Length: 250
Image (cartoon, rainbow, N blue to C red; front, side):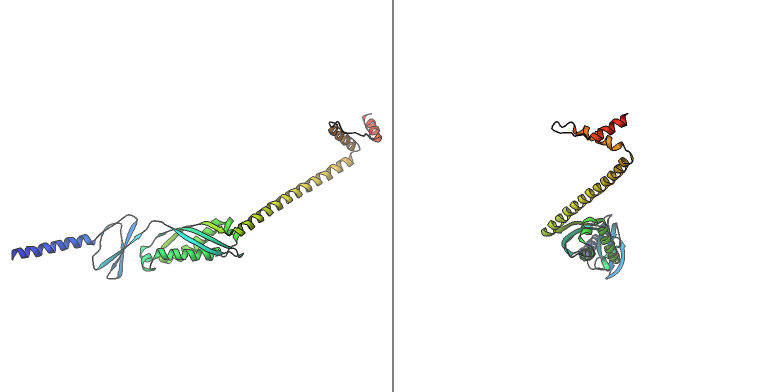
């Protein structure tokens, strides 16, 4: 009888030890445990050593670290009807473990799907040139939209980065031709501006020469000096110019 009692006592002790071991949980510094008692939310615990009563309580672990998630390539039609493929990466973290577990079935999958639809919706409001040249602005718009919509899930979207905007090869050629035409246009504008300035300076020089009777003669002599270096040149001196120069010297 005593042996039987010792066996029962040993079984009870063993059961208690197993129950205690099974009820212990260790949560790291970046983890929290959402505790449910008989299916009802009780509290959020952690980090450190916590006790969960087996069969009565259940715990769901939640990682509070920043999660980096790739958004698969999305087909986007811009406002100017150009089809492109765009992919991005989002950075987010759980701020409220209770809402992240209770308000949505799978917050990782939900955030991924929301990021894909938001990427298409936001970029579809902009033209292709804006997608290529104003990525910082678009990143901020997408981040703000995602952060507003995920706030109900206790999630904070801290950053969004558009990684690639892939164009059709025909569109790449069209953009290259457009850029070449733009460079040619700028070159013509610069050339025309230079011609305009040169014409203005010539007009001013002509006015100055017209006001000074001897200025045109000195200018003519300077021109003759410049062309005198060419041995094959034939220089013709007008007689009236020679007479005027003599008079001016006297």
